[in-house]
Image (tube, rainbow, N blue to C red):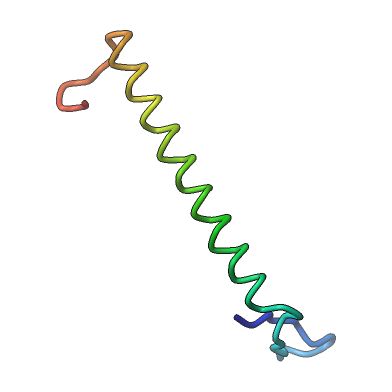
Length: 61
């Protein structure tokens, strides 16, 4: 895990290691995992409510 930082007045970038790479990698991966779970959960609830109200298109279940 590297952090890219632009060099002022240049087209180059510098790369550096974060202060605590294990912590940051864990937080990043865990956070994305929970966001994906929430998105999946919202999709399931949306499909369930559409089916319950009769707004289901042919082939959509």
